[in-house]
Amino acid sequence: MTFTKMALEYLPMAGLVLVTQKNLKAKDGWDGLPCNLTQAQYIDMIFEFSGVRKFTDVTLTVNVNKKRSNAIFNRSQIFFSSTKDSFLNASFIQHYPKNYNPYNAKVTLSLCENTARFMKLRLYFGGEWLLISEISFNSVRVSTDEKMKSLKDCLGNAAVFRTTIPSE
Image 1 (cartoon, rainbow, N blue to C red):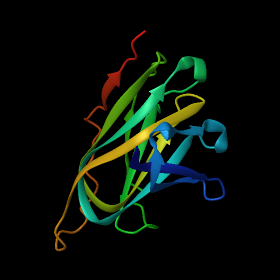
Image 2 (image 1 turned 135 degrees about the horizontal axis):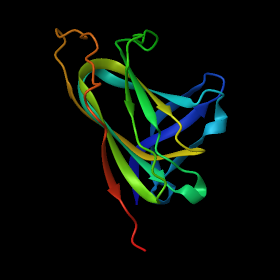
Image 3 (image 1 turned 45 degrees about the horizontal axis):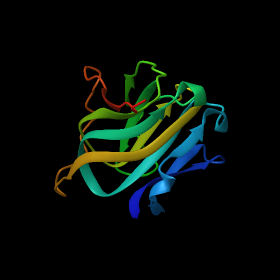
Image 4 (image 1 turned 180 degrees about the vertical axis):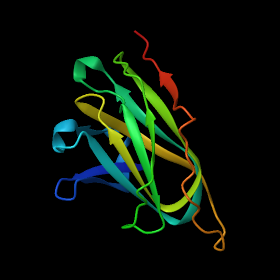
């Protein structure tokens, strides 16, 4: 069985993660990024959409396992832009608790109805590895006459965690 998913490819010279859609076998479920790939304690993922969209939230499925040093990112920073090279200096940060019990977590980050064609998601490592299997956006296309709005602050919104704990 094949399915379409986001594939992450680290570009060390550019210091960012390239996100592409690829058809992969079901056994290829996790993309792993070690924290020693970059001197910064974070990775940047840049997403391009076919047009300007209004974003409600983004959900990432990540793996947590203390024995393997996998952890949820401990905070995120989100940037919006109408072009690939002009991300606003303004962003908002969300923090997450550390939990090393083994499980798969669906972490939903509020995007507070911000509009953009490009989004940069900066994830700060919470362990030695960040394993991601899926990234999905809840968004709608906006009309061509609706412009990008100034960044709406999400500081009052906490991240939502939905976890799947494996049976022993």
